[in-house]
Length: 229
Image (cartoon, rainbow, N blue to C red):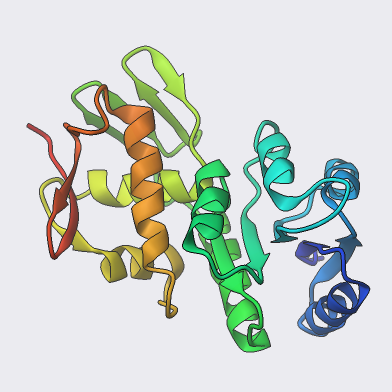
């Protein structure tokens, strides 16, 4: 028997929770809802959802604090649902460990496509054991781990996927749209900027001096590449 994929919807507005639950249930998902981050943490620990849709501005515990606490114990994909238009709000969510964002109001088809893309990426079977070694970096696909020298470094699912894409083709220059296509299977308007945030996060985790990166190089006007020098 195939287990239904589960989604946890976290939003303080009952109308939003009800709308998303009805739609996603029709799409074949098992849906739980929470009205704030505190309740969401309890439900997530109990139900272990496959993906979380998260509003940012909520009472009791907002989205940012939820991500901080949740990322200490789980790498479940998180898609932010935000009505805020400031770029810094979206960037902060990504920096804390969210994987993607959708700006309200959003279309249900786009949201469903984003969910399926994240779940496919999370579950994609590995054909054979793969370990990438580049100087002091060791990226292990078997246990989804990264070591910088002797130190294990925690990565979000999106950071891991992005680093794998770059390390698997050293010196090749990838545009932001190239990276999104490999990570999600399709591109969506407005989300190419999330790649810049993930790159910045990766640099703080793997580079001795993120302002002068040794590994992840910026090719101005084009994109990024991984240097194996």
